[in-house]
Figure 1 (cartoon, rainbow, N blue to C red):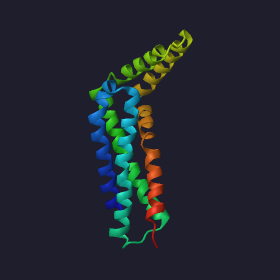
Figure 2 (figure 1 turned 90 degrees about the vertical axis):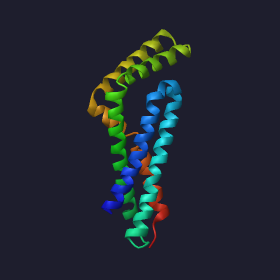
Figure 3 (figure 1 turned 90 degrees about the horizontal axis):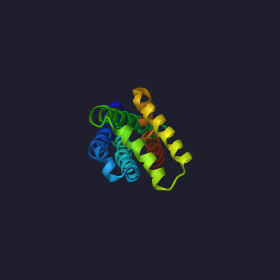
Figure 4 (figure 1 turned 120 degrees about the vertical axis):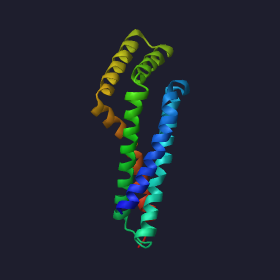
Length: 169
């Protein structure tokens, strides 16, 4: 299982990392509201390797039979490896290539409230929220934790679906 999980986890993580490096630097041009859809689409595409990894494990290692638990375990491990790659790519992007990302995003939050005709109290709340988000992202551990919980739920869901679909006795 180790070889299959590592192979498909790294493939999934590589897809997520490459797509992140191709899209995140242009988030301001794409628009932060649309870049969320691009980001989660990328995560879903990269997590397809969970399905293919579980199928490969079932067919090539276990001789065509796998229980739900074993399939879910393999899928979960692939998703975790992929998520770790995602986090590493994000941290490299954030701290080395786009260190002003938090400022750009904070400005977007405030401007979207202003643009929607928010009251001064709403704008002040948005500024406070943006400052809080910037402070959180400045801490590498919190930043990594926040990045880790972006792809992991998608990976868990794909692992669960894969285990249900691919189980075979």
